[in-house]
Length: 249
View 1 (cartoon, rainbow, N blue to C red):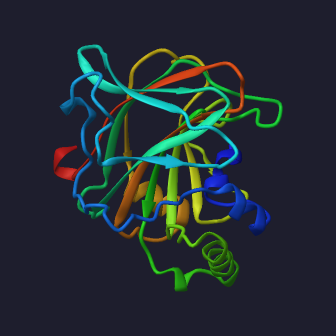
View 2: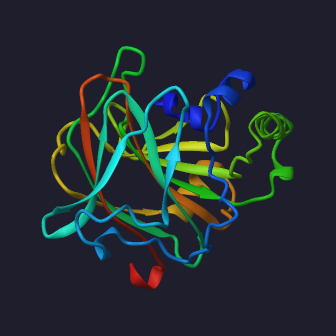
View 3: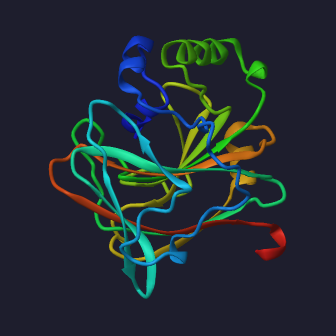
């Protein structure tokens, strides 16, 4: 699953600087929102909502295609990847203790395992968190400094990446091979539910604590990613994403 994490890191920092086009650092004109903009509030065929910004992963791969379509009476985002990798990212500020539950809908039409990545996932939901980078171990701080030096961007303090894996045990946590500050959680696994709309709900506060062994900071962004190395086209759909408190559980 680590191939797409070139967005976050690569073994050689020089290669990282050449490959990474953007990172989850809000641009100066990004409005600080307290909730995620719903796709369903827009008409099919409308432009992608402005709050969901294009998220480029690599200069060496074309962008995946995103459009607003109607599915089951609601406007959702249809993603199409074909040897491509990109996403949409939504900057916001959410108290992970007050609103720990993230819910979303998605429908995945196929998985994309390959010889180089037999457990790859074509769809991901990424939640980034704030925190004091100076508290991290020396190796992580050095990596962050090198990344910032070569790219001019700051990595998030930590991130949870929710995926639909090919083989990873459902609810299993997979460590990232490049940095300890990104943890991958398989929300779904295998082919049994492909082609079906599923609603997912994750307690991101509990997931963060389980993955990192510490309390989470504020949530600073949520992104959706769609990618595949395969030459064949792969389609996936994303419905509304929303945070809510424990009282709304």
